[in-house]
Every structure is written in structure tokens, then in C-alpha cells.
Amino acid sequence: MVLTVLLGLLAVFAVGLIGLVLKAALSTGQLSPSPEGAAIGAVTSFFDTLGIGNFAPTTAWFKFRKLLPDSHIPATLNVGHALPVIVQSAIFLILLGVAVDPILLTGCVIAAVLGAAVGANLVVRAPVRTVQLVVGIALLIAAGLFAASNLNLMPAGGAAGGLPTPLLIIAIAVHFVLGILMAFGIGLYAPSLILLSLFGLDPRLAFPIMSSCCAFLMPSTALRFVRSDRIDLKVVLGMMIGGVPAVLLAALVVKELPMVWLRWGVVLVVIYAALILLRDALKPGEPAVQKETL
Image (tube, rainbow, N blue to C red):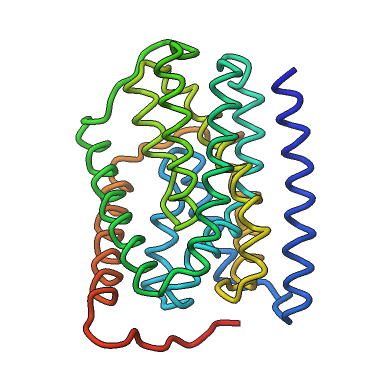
């Protein structure tokens, strides 16, 4: 029953998100999808489905290419990756969702959505330096998590499909905080996987929880983000178009790849992008005015 409801809601969210983005893009003259955005969506969504994550690599790509102002990164990440993550969530729910405790699944999803609603209101008002600082620190943490995964330092997890009540409450509370951080462009997947694995959950069952949290919170924040001037809708449309087929390819055709060397490459790229963001955030004087990408 819970699975059916979640899948139905995902379909509604997907339709609503597409309509919302198209309406905003039409009203602002940004209806032409960015080809580079499509490439970003395809590459990062493909590897996100296989467990790499997409926020850190996408942020690194934005910084390398100077594709959009730093203040636009959180909104463009959350809205651009939302539709591919909805598709990803539906696949994981169909394949693995029946084995997950429905209270844990729905509790974490609701908490993450509420947290993201709080975070979205903060990030659209935050000074550029604050956004740069938060995202820069988050990228360094992401790089550390990638490295830990390669060195087999991540928790192995257990075989449980649910958690005892005290740990269940903690997990839901932590996902509220992770929802806030998601609004700033800080990926939820890695910290969620670590937390749930440490608590003894079967790591495979963390995937429907993680993807469902993101699939519901990202369209929810889109309601706030698309009305702000801190978003590049051309890049967003490209990411949506490129990301969906990449998710389907990764989840239904490829399914698994050796990821160790790719993660090391991501570590280096993400560290570089983080240092650039932190340098700009800590630079004396007024933040440089960045050209808006429309």
C-alpha cells in the first residue's frame, strides 16, 4: 500500500515539476535547453544511479566551466537533477522498496522534505559568500567520503530491513537536517548511507530511502527555487533531458561497474572545485559580480 502511494505521488510530482519548470522557462525566455546541461545531466545521473552521487561532480563541472554564478549552484542542482532522481527513486522502490520498513521509509522522506523547505528559504536569501563557503566545505566532505569508500573505510551495514524505535527516531531527525543541507547543494546520499549502515540497515535498502528522500524534496524546493533569480533554467532543462535516459540505462541495462578509479578521479576534481569556492568565499573585499547566464 505504501509503495503504491509513493509511486503515485512520484508520478504527480514529476508532472508538476515539468509543468513548473516549463512555465518558468517560458516566462523568462529560457526555454531553450543547454546542450552542455544535457551532457552534465547524462553523465552525472548515470553514475549517480550506480552510487557515485551527482551533486559534488555537477558542482565541480559548474566551477571548471564557469557555467553559472556560484549563487545559482544550489537551485540549479536541486531542480535540474529532480526529474532524473524521481525516475531513479521509482526504479529502486519497485526493485527494493517492498523490503524496507514503511515507517522508516516514509518518516525519512517526510523529514527530508520538511528540512528542504526550511533550507530553500534560507539559500535564496543567503549572501553569495555564505553559499560559496557552505558548498565549498560540503565538497571537501564529499571528497573525504569518496576516498573513504575507495579505502573500504565505510560501514559495511547489516541485514535489517528496519530499525528499532530509538534509532528510527534518530534517523528521521537526521534526515530533516540532511534535507536542509540538500537545499544548499549538499548531497544526501553519502551521509544517509553511512548513517543507515551504521545503524545496521542492509545497505541495499538504503537506496530506495535515499532516492525517495531526494525525489520528493527536490521538486518541493523547486516551488521556491524557480521563482528566484538564482537559477539557470536553460541548464536545468538540459539536465532533465539528459538525465532521465541516463538513469534508465544505468539502472536497467548497465546495473554495475567497477567504480574505484572513477571515485579517485572525482576526489581530485571535487577537491579542486572546493578550494576555488573557499578561496572566493574568503577573499577580502566585496564578492566579485558574476555574469548571469540566461
